[in-house]
Amino acid sequence: MKKRLKVLLGMSIMSMFLFGAVAFAATDFTQVGFSKVIAEREIEAGEAAKLSHSGIKIQIPEGAFTNDVTFQVLEGDNKNFQKIAPAGETVIMNFAFRVIDSKTNEIIGTFNKPLTFSFKDKDINKGSIYYNFKVDGTIANNNAASVIDGRTLTHPVGAAPVGWLITSPTNSINK
Image 1 (cartoon, rainbow, N blue to C red):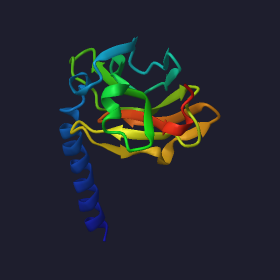
Image 2: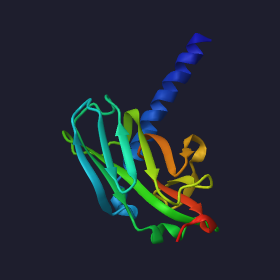
Image 3: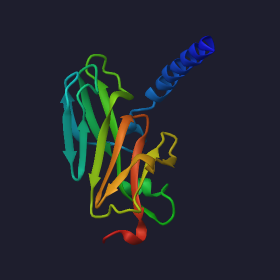
């Protein structure tokens, strides 16, 4: 039984490395609609940091990165993402991360510790949904771990192999 468990554990670790390599190759989201850098910060290895911009707050815990990085928050045009939003939902926010290792100049796809993303906006409500945006142009609901408190949506982010969209019911949008 122990041998079987070790083999399974070894295969799981190998799969994570292989999947990480596949996801890593697709993490420059400037190429798939998140073309504008809206916030940027140089973060030293092991350093805790905060970034904010127009209702967005990102808390990066101590130890999230092993090497010095350039951490960028990217955004695109909501109108472009609205085309793939479900009927009856309006895209109120879109974003992606591009984290560049300062030593290797490679994009980092996973973090040592999860970051905390929050977005405060007049259109956030209990009906808001947090979606993953995949590089193939599709979205998938990722609302399971999101917390909505009043007009703020908070979500932990442990990796950046996808971008994200936040929608709210169209009939709840304050014009």
